[in-house]
Image (tube, rainbow, N blue to C red; front, side, top):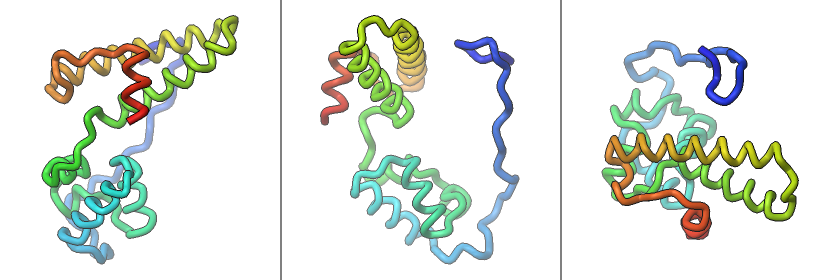
Length: 152
């Protein structure tokens, strides 16, 4: 299947091995992993960064294998949930940076198109998150609101 905004086909990504049980070499218990996830989240790390830290520094390959819950579920249970999802926040940050670039370089037409493509991705993602009740129905994307949201 071709990409959405390009005519290239692309290559498939890697897949995790099909492992159902906790590896024997993992030293941390379920309680220790949960406490570490909460501590790292309170330090200001988003869930993907927490997963990378757990993998690299604590030798935990997958939190779901050990705890039965992914990192976002652990954070929801401990009332440490961000108001917007991480992937949407990354796209919004990209759009704000690109609009700042376009303010100082108004004739950069390729980046104008890039901004339009990023904003269409944001709108599609917002529509999906509203449908799955992750975002409230009255949440709307605009560049001005995005700047305010990222300044928090």
